[in-house]
Every structure is written in C-alpha cells, then in structure tokens.
Length: 140
Image (cartoon, rainbow, N blue to C red; front, top):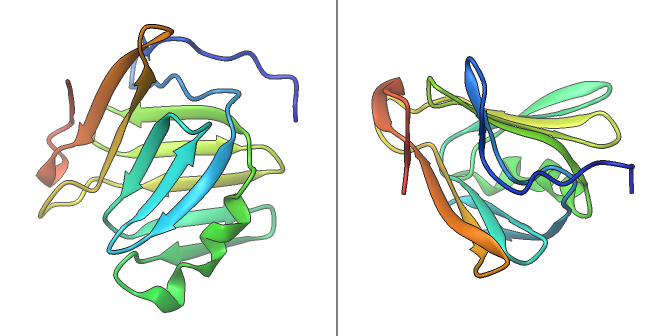
C-alpha cells in the first residue's frame, strides 16, 4: 500500500470537494443495477450511471445496466484511493494507486452516483449525491 495520509473529513477546494476516502482500500465490489465499491468496510460509492475506468494503457466505458461491460471494475479490488473529489458540477473522480482512475459525470436524467459512510463516533457519517441535470451535489 502506498504511503498516503488518510483524509478524516470533507475538504472544500475551489472547484471540488475532496472526500474522506484518501488512503483507504476498496475491499468489496457489488454489482446489481449499479456498481458499488465498499471502502474499508464502512463507506460506499454507488455508481448508477455509465462511467469510465482508466488504467495506465486504456480507458473503458462501464454501464452498470449492461453486465458485459462491468468486468473491468473488478481490477479495482484492493485498490488504494489516492484522491477522491466530487466536482461542483456533479462529477466524481476517484484516483487509485497503480495509475488507475474512475470518472463519472452528472446524469441529466437522475442521480449518477452517491457516496455514504462514516463510522460514528470515530468518523462522522455523511452522504453525498450527484444531483440530476448537472445541478451539482447535495450533502446530508
């Protein structure tokens, strides 16, 4: 595992919110009508709309509604998150070790993704959702 400092809280930057997933590992991947990454057993990243997964030599489109496209996501099992950022436009970027990344844009027709987690009282619970039509993100 790379030497990465864990982010304990959401941090606001000019164009995005840095999420408290840095330095943590994908330890479960669930596939149903969405793709869900479970991070260290406490946080979930649920992807409901098509997204891209990039590796050092290729970028692939994954559509959670089409099982024939989701296999590349399995390569993220045990990946360590180096940066997790929710854009003010409703996009989400997860950068992982070994030059891997995942990017999802806002969905004009619905919620493209949501993240929830925390382990009270050790870390605060939170929920972040990408709003439809690129109108941003919502915290709760």
